Length: 193
Image (cartoon, rainbow, N blue to C red; front, side, top):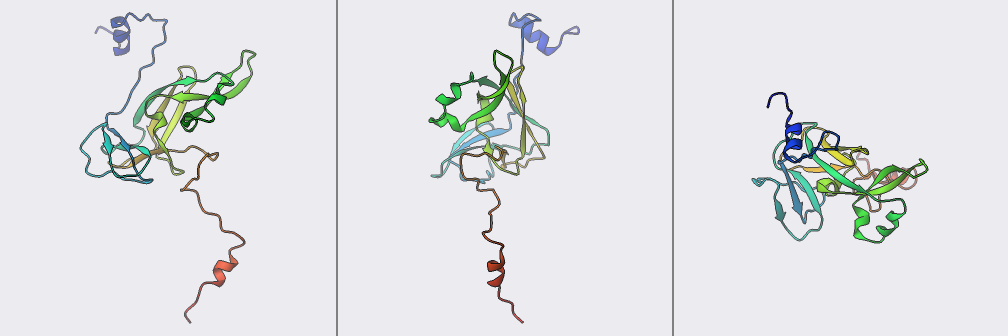
């Protein structure tokens, strides 16, 4: 194309000028959204790519690898819709509350604050795991989040991000605290001498 990049060619094809913002979106075709999965599920022998499967009577959803994925693979680039300061109150008592991300923004006076953002694409479908295998990066200027594999991923493995430490549900992956100093547990150990 005589020195014209694919992005420039796309811009010309769609009548977009050089000064207009263009955000290329990307989604790996090697992902599956699986519905009704138990925590820690592993999908085996799946030949579908980006398929929706119905299985069992469990609740929940998860994003799974449809094939082996190398570390640092871009999984999805998701547009976000930041909520205006104060609008987060509207999501608090709805199911949307569990799917929004914290999003940094500035007030009209230039003060930096945190609000919420609705993430489109697969971004709101990744489940939580402390030992995450997916990392994400906010781009506050282009209003997108990019998700990448943090390590090599095996086919059928669930792709998870960490929601951090302030969760609004019980973290089944969290280490359990032992009450007391643990001596009562040691006293119950029977030694065979």
